[in-house]
Length: 428
Ligand code: PLP
Image 1: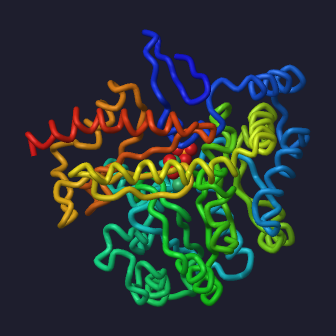
Image 2: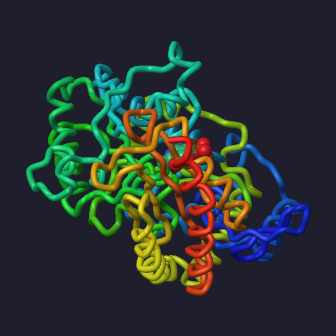
Image 3: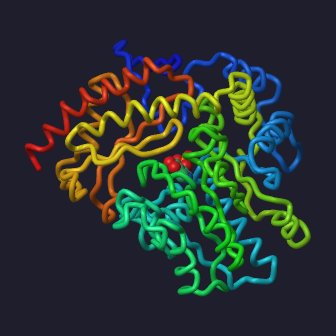
């Protein structure tokens, strides 16, 4: 397997357009030498030291670089290697904060459904992806759910100003139902990842959420693992709403896929409570702050800055969505949504009723296989309708994609559609 720019080549030499950055990861494109060289230089200088004994140059430089991209208040950053680990650490930080604040009864979590926060057990508990929990239900902790602002699947289609779900007010309903004294944190993806097919909440949504969390002393954790790192055209997906979360998680694209890297960012006011109390977050992992992983992250952030790639994601995102909108002429494309260089194309059996295909037709899976045959890598998602049904094709190409390559992506998408959705209909 080999990659360069937006393309991948398999062992047989077949070429694929990477239409989803693997899993929304390959933000700067494949095969960037500068990142590999920075990692090699760091590995030969010092590959590993543990944070209990020493800090290291790349972790310090990466923290400063990342702090300049996220809201100034979130200036304490902890680096791990996967999104799930970042979510676990963020939730544990929220819990420890309340215990050390003398409010140990604040132990419940609220999350959005559908939603995804990872596969380790607390992150999986927070994820409203029932089929991922199939074999582990006994080990899952109870997490309260609020319906995600998924306009396409809401009765009001996002248009009713008073809609509790689309306005975010459903969060307040849930907090009042459970009791604010019990709620430690609300965790949510600012722009949906695959579980909602890149659903973008309404203008008022996050401002309302912020006010509700403030009103009820609930920590707001923005999970930017999928939608962050510039993917939506701003560094964080929350940025355009002018809202600052209490804790932010990042992952996937922050090191462009060159190394596994994730981060949890929090403000001094939260960290100080721990510092004055027990002394530190009760969470340690061998590979947190790993020098080579941080060198990869630092080189990636510098590359993004030097090539103005987040601005490019915004500009190309507009071209991308203009061109993807043309797919709505296909009879089973119900919705195309997203922002910047992330999009979800929802495939439905009936456009008027928005009825999904029967699950047994495996439309998303067939479409993904057909796309690969057509030289396009996409990411399938199912289960957002009633926990089982629903077919979404996720697209999230590298930020360096050119308009002609977006045309190529759309053309290959159509080939895959003809080769699969029509075939699936025969078995529906
Ligand atoms: N949070 C979100 C929003 C994600 O999309 C994902 C992964 O898809 C995760 C957390 C978990 O990240 P990882 O797979 O790196 O553990």
